[in-house]
Image (cartoon, rainbow, N blue to C red):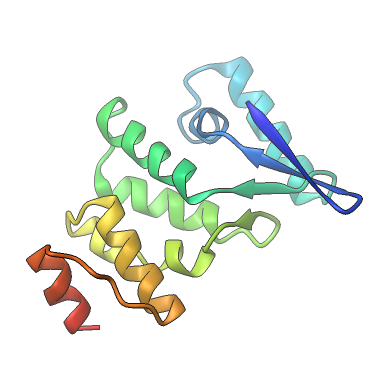
Length: 138
């Protein structure tokens, strides 16, 4: 499912988890081809695609829990995907900076919060000792 968000005269399409999953996993040939077509149109400038942080989180959860992908595999493919300049990525800096902690088995949300805080000059307020230690070392 793609949700449309209209800003001015330009339509921005919010991409759903299932399109990213079909693209990355390719477990349905028909849906894989459709997802490739969507991304090719975005790369060519024919579509504007927005990837929200919550969609990245759900994608990682499904890749790990259902498809049994390793944290390193997930981080590597997400780094490549989220680096594409033809995609609009919510908090791109925060997302791109989180993968080292994620690979080191820190939960997605904690990895993202630390990275986003660092990228945006925020502070994470938490009772979690691991987060406090990691934030102190940044």
